[in-house]
Image (cartoon, rainbow, N blue to C red; front, side):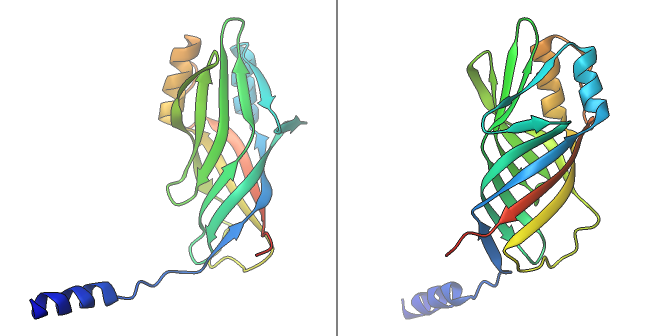
Length: 186
């Protein structure tokens, strides 16, 4: 019995080391929408709109980031957003909202609603960090994380089925993004 207790203590005594991570309590992600994505929507006669508090102006969509956790050692991050986008035709409205960027998984997920009914949270966009991102990231009150976004296979399949088209394809360029995160006071 004594040996089992000592073994259990040794197992729990293993020190787990992790790189420093920081919480950011504000900021935004700005996405410069690609002409390829905008043209595809126009060709399909699908309107692009916003879900408040998102702003869209001059081809740039801005989504408030209300909380983020970033590992400075390897740029792993989860960035939570409010707002979203709408895609609408004459007969169908798709809402994409509450985005979460996970740089470790390389994906942006979002809650999807079709005609006011929740479908699911799905992977919408592949996220590829810019080659300019070098690690470790600087420890600063303001942090910028640039990336590119492309449509995931799941999102392409969902949009094609929802709008009864075949035009959406995996890896369609959605645009380039920059998440600008602001550290809150502890």
